[in-house]
Image (cartoon, rainbow, N blue to C red; front, side, top):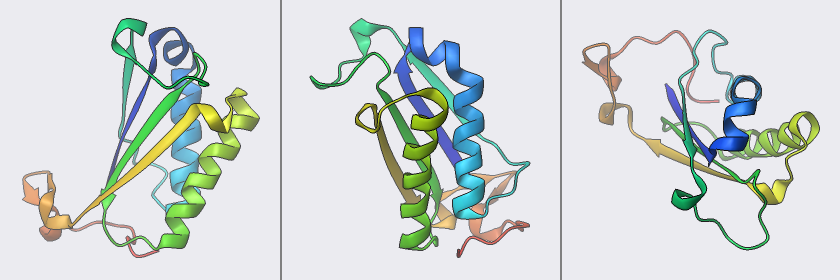
Length: 129
């Protein structure tokens, strides 16, 4: 299971939302072997007075938070991070300096999905990749 939150300035995030979603999803599918038909993305377009970021970043500054079941290998998570940086640079011309990624892992029993705790849920994909 995975939930992804994407934060950025409304002026930038809104014009690239579909492409950002496709890029992030392709990275999750490739690095974590996630099913192609499962996409849970939330966009948080923010006005500049509510989105402070460090000097040296541009208006394209984007924060990506990824919540997943624990169990993925360190190598798989590093691959995910590298793919996001690479594809954002290639496809959106967004610099690595303008992207920050955080991966939050929690035990399956901390998730509630379709009326069940996550550890009681039958899923059709591997978590331990």
